[in-house]
Amino acid sequence: MSMVIWFTGQPGSGKTTLAERFIEDKLINFMKIIPRNIVHIDGDDIRKTLARTTADDYGRDGRFKLINWAKDTSVFLVSKGFLPVVSMVSPYRWMREDLKMIGKGTHYSKLQPIFKVLEVYCHTTEVRDKEEYFVDDYQPPLTNYLDMDTTNKSIEECLDEILTLYRKMATIS
Image (cartoon, rainbow, N blue to C red; front, side, top):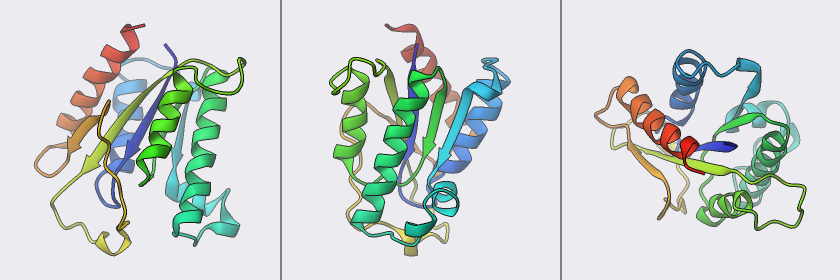
């Protein structure tokens, strides 16, 4: 089953930590997925490498460009047999929902793959010193997502919840 795993949430909510650990602990070590078949797309990494000219644009236009790049790259990677794991703030609900619609086949090209999107919404009430980077107009998901409150959960508890839903989605066609 083709899939994109998309971790979203405000800065400091655990997106990158959970994505990295999910890849290592669950996908590679537990599910035995070959590491070269998994591509982690992290918002901070993209800003430091590929989006250098707009790296400091945290406004609406800069975020649109970054999210669209991640969406397009994810679709491309799925079409080539890779498993993209995205971790980025991605505050605009409609953009995340658009990826889900593309995965269902409502896209402009018959050459693009059909795939599922496991959206993991990370959030916390803990102060983690990233609050100054919060997006004022962040829109939490409303449907078809895993609600991951990282406030009082261990990383392992979070990973087990994600793995349970991942396995369920991977077996349902």
